[in-house]
Each structure stands twice: as C-alpha cells, then as structure tokens.
Length: 267
Image (cartoon, rainbow, N blue to C red; front, side):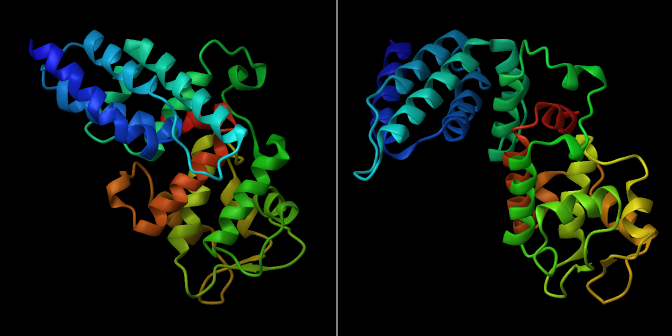
C-alpha cells in the first residue's frame, strides 16, 4: 500500500514537472533529489525508484507557446537519455551517492555516460587532447566565456587565445582587468590544465614573453600565475564565489564536446 501511495504521489508531482522541468541536466537533478530522499533513506529500493521516475519522464511534454519542433525533439531526446542513464544502476549510484550533486555534476555525468563504449583513439591513447586539437567551436566557446566574465582585456580572439596558451605570443598584450580577480581567470586555466589541454610547461610558456599583464598593470610572473591557478587545487564547489561557480559551469558545458577533457576533470 505504501508503495502504491508513493507511486501516485510521483504522478502528481510530474504534472508540474511536465511544464517546469526541461533538459537532461534538470531531470537528473530531480532524479538525484528523489534518490536521496527515498532510496538513500531506505524508503524504497532502486528498482521502484527507477520505475516511478520513468513514469515522470513519460508524462506529456509541455513547452512554451513559441517552442519549435526542434525544442520538442530535444526535450524528448533529453528525457530518453535520462531514462537510459537510470537503467544503469551502478553508474547512476556512482554519482547519486555523493552528498552534493549540482548542475556541473549532472553535465559530467551525461558526458561520462555518452563516452561509455567509445573507441576514440585520441581519448584512449594517453587521455590527453591538447587545446590545439580542440574543435574550433570549443575554442570559440572558451573565448566566449572569457568575454562573458570579462576575464581579459581587450576582448581576445580565438586565435590569440590559443597562441597565448601555447606560445605566450598573441598578437597583442592582454590584461586581467582591475574590476575582476586574477583567480577568476586562474580557474579557467586550472580547468584546462586538469583537462589535459595545456602543456606541462604551460606556466613558463604563457609568462616568458610578457604578453599577459596582471590587474595591477605589471607583467604576469611565472610564480604568480602558478599561484592563482593552483589555489584551486582540490577545490570544492562550495568554496567558489558565485561568479566562479558560473565560470565553472560554463567551462564544463563547453568542454562537454571533448570527452577526454571531462574524463580528466572527473579524476
């Protein structure tokens, strides 16, 4: 009887979700919340949780009036993706057992699931894909993040961004503006370094030519750049500022197109 009531309650909740929850990330956040409240507390088993959540995913899709067919197709695809993820109990619980599961974690989970069974030689050879081999749209996405959060001035181009990180010699000098923090730009570099996008001598490469300027207007020194990047070593998301949380989420979204990068960030 208790199981039947729980099942009915999930149907009632799903009426709101059908119009308010969209996208694989948001559905995974809902699934995590349900898992923590009921499975982790031994109120129901995983099988019952999965079956009941599948009912939610099968509810009619309700979108805004201006939604297109593509929006409808994307929502259906996202729901199906979450359904298949939940089918793999061991994989799902690897993530859902964590006491914290946020949007960035959901993105990592989706990318990791998409990589199951892949045989991409670039990803499996040494687990590293340098930024020079990134798809152009990924580089463009990273540059858009730099622009959005005003991490460098003047506005850097995609070509100069790659040159700065791989040769230290972009076409002009770039400065971390005084209205931002060095560690904000450092978080982007830290994530790229962890993802395997930068060379082992990245710090010397970037600093030696003197084309990166600090927010104080001085040449960025190697020890200082290393410090603002490695201040994020082993960080927990709750330690980040609100701006840095947004930067982290943006970078993860862009790097989701590079499976090896996400795999390295998970380690």
